[in-house]
Amino acid sequence: MTLRRRSAAVAAGASIALLLSACSSDDNGGGGGGASASEVPGAEVLDDLDEAVEVEFWHSMDSTNGQVLNGLIDDFNADNEGRVRVTGTFQGDYDTTLAQHRAAIQQGDTANLIMVYDLGTQFMIDSQQTVPAQAFIDKDEYDTGSLEDALLNYFTVDGDLRSFPFNNSTPLMYINRDAFEEAGLDPDNPPKDLAEIREYAEALTVTSEDGQVERYGFGAAVYGWFIEQFMARAAVPYCDNGNGREGRAQEALFNDPKIVEVVEWWQSMIDDGLAVQIGRSYDDAQAAFTAGRAAMTLESTGSLGGFLEQSDFEVGAGYFPLVSSDDPGGSIIGGASLWINGEGHSQEEVRGSWEFVKHLLTPESQSTWHAGTGYLSVNTEGYDGPEAKERAEEFPQFAVAAAQLADSETSVNTAGCMMGVMSDARVAAEEGWEAALTTDDTPEAALTRSKESLQRKIDEYNESVG
Image 1 (tube, helix red, strand yellow):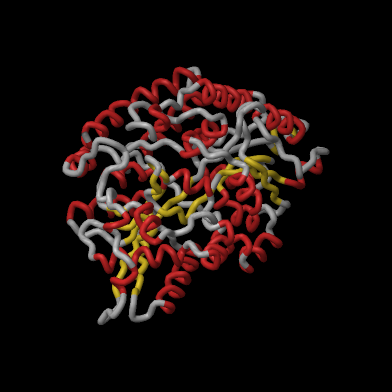
Image 2 (spheres, rainbow, N blue to C red; image 1 turned 120 degrees about the vertical axis):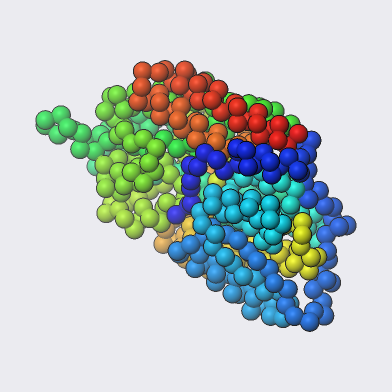
């Protein structure tokens, strides 16, 4: 399953302000991150070593995902015996890993390589500890042609790739195929926009003789990532200054008329008995779907494996819906990327980290990773690997996510918002959305108030980095 947290203090507050005040930059691209290809060590630094270079890798993968990752680490270590040895350490969920990294920066003792979720991108740049991915690519003339464009787009800032995409996902629409067939609907043609979801939900909703709803047509969590997705698919920026990519983001824009329309639609679906009221718990949303209480839902690709295992009906998948049929489409991703720390680390350690990242991005590794975890294959050639092909034959639903990304045009909107307090922004968006569903506030008023409450954190963060 995809790791997700809603902590309101991942990259904001006094501790972050103090930390970043010592390493401020005037734009989005500063940081020990400013290394050029000429400053990146070449492969020769790993020649004629007395002992293997030790690379410490902090990550957030446990359970099955952690086992698959450990297998990839073992493969690399076996192939590089006496040269590079990677030790992977589970640090906790995404928020905890980033918090541990912040503490390590203050102590001057960071890991060589760290997995950081998408919401931490601006902080990682501002902290000035990392060597940008682009520097390694330029140094080795590394061919990124087979890497997924939409993923590269997300982690590219000011024209340079800042980190390496790895464990990434995208949200989809999931459907109960059995319920679709029962209602006379085509499960191979799920709804494409909000109006169609309502139309399908009217056919899918089942009410008992005493007026109790036995099965709702739709039900999903009030989850801030979905707002980001709806905005990207409508080609609407989530924050100002070109989604924070043409200048530092000064304002969140999630009270946009498109999102007001989404929340109004959501409320009408609940009021008319077509959607189950779930709230912000994605665990409850998943349970409603697998129990057959909601015939359609929205969730990450990382949830597909669990849905297949836990449902006693056939699960189908379709693209994440558009707000309106004339929206241009596109897709935004979630998950995490890999950052190589340069500050305080030897050239041998920096080069060893890059060698390991290259191993993770090979078609062979990505085939194993995708098949074992359900995450996207960063290297599109990974889908042609034996493990990925076997999984695709058994579960064709996994191909939907790859197709959705392939159909997505890259732009500043599908690249996502670059904001130092992006985690806080997601929470604020959720709070406004939920308030609109549970109080007398209009969607526009509730979202605007949440946006305004976020502004202080945005200002404080921006002031801390200069």
